[in-house]
Every structure is written in structure tokens, then in C-alpha cells.
Length: 209
Ligand SMILES: Cc1cc2nc3c(=O)[nH]c(=O)nc-3n(C[C@H](O)[C@H](O)[C@H](O)COP(=O)(O)O)c2cc1C
Image (cartoon, rainbow, N blue to C red; front, side):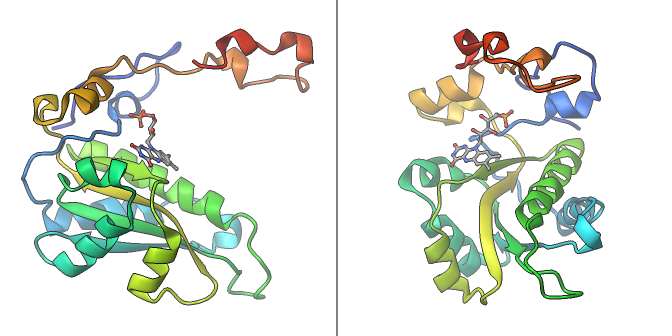
């Protein structure tokens, strides 16, 4: 059953699963069944990609079945992420293959496509009652070294996968973040029909939204 905690309210109706997806820091102890993980990664492979390259790679550390990899991923994170990410049963590194396979030219869209695959994966996870939380706060060098990532591949992000838990499991500061109202920029700030907006149109007053 999908997580219905802290649902996002938007200006216009969208698929419910899009408003249910969120980035929690509290997780239950429940392991993620292997079949569910396969569904989540199958969803990633459904994403579009430049030249159909599918430049995404995912390194998985499962606390139950691959604890060593799990700890390597956890140790690559900044302390501020480790404190809550260790609650999740599965940790993942997303990695981009930086050159096209058909001609070895640089793939300028590799990271774009990795992000798009992970966004798709996140929606599938939400639909299965799971959630993911992506992080930039990790060391690419530590991941490279710990997993001997070959040249031509670049760690992009790390993320948790798990069943969301109760916010009361968190410290006061993290609980406040977990339960804070979720907001988004209005469409007017990022959709420009007909041309780039003039400086006078930019709403700097809402830059913090
Ligand atoms: C590429 C990326 C990097 C992020 N890095 C971190 C991070 O290092 N630590 C963290 O707590 N959250 C991180 N986040 C989570 C964002 O803060 C979160 O997605 C955003 O506040 C929107 O909240 P929501 O996902 O619940 O809608 C990251 C998200 C993305 C997509």
C-alpha cells in the first residue's frame, strides 16, 4: 500500500503516486523483498535515454544479503546523511556510463538519463509502498575506491530504499524536516511559453520557495 504521509499539494491534479513520492529519513526494519527490488530496477530500465544507451548502472548494498557493500555505501556518505540513511535496509549508488557504446563519443546526456531512470524507479517504489531518498552528500572518491569503479563510469548519487517509518523514530531536528509542509514553485516560475522571461518578470521575492 502506498505511503500517504505528508502528501504534496500541487496547483493542478497529477497522478496520485507523484504526490505520494517523498524522501523520508525514517524507515521500518522491514527488509525489501527481492521481487520488489527487481520491480523497482525494472522500472528504471523503462526510462527513455539518448540513443537508447541506458547509461545507468546501480550498485546495491542490501543489509540482509550484501552487508559489506551496504557498509561501503554508508561510509561514503557525509555524517549528516549517515545518521538517518543507516535506518534504511537498502542503499544504492547510481552510476553513469560516460561514453556512448556505439561510437565511444562522450555522452553529454548520461547524467540526465541516470536521473531520469532514478526518477522512474522512485515512482515504482512509491507504488509498491516503498520510498527512496536520493543524496548528493557522499564522496565519489570513496565509492570509486571501495568498489573499484572503472574509468568511464561516474558515481552520480546515492539513495536509500525502504518502507517509510514513523517520524517519531527520528531526532527532533530530523522529525521537524520529515513533517514540514512540502511546497513547490508555482508553474509561472519555471514554465515559460513563447520565450525566456525578462528580468522584470522574475520573481526573486519567491526564490526561497
Ligand atoms: C540529486 C539529489 C541530491 C540530494 N541530496 C540530498 C542529501 O545529500 N541529503 C538529504 O538529506 N537529502 C538530499 N536530497 C533530497 C532532497 O532534499 C529532496 O528530494 C527535496 O527536498 C524534495 O523533497 P521530496 O523528495 O520529499 O519531495 C537530494 C535529492 C536529490 C534529487
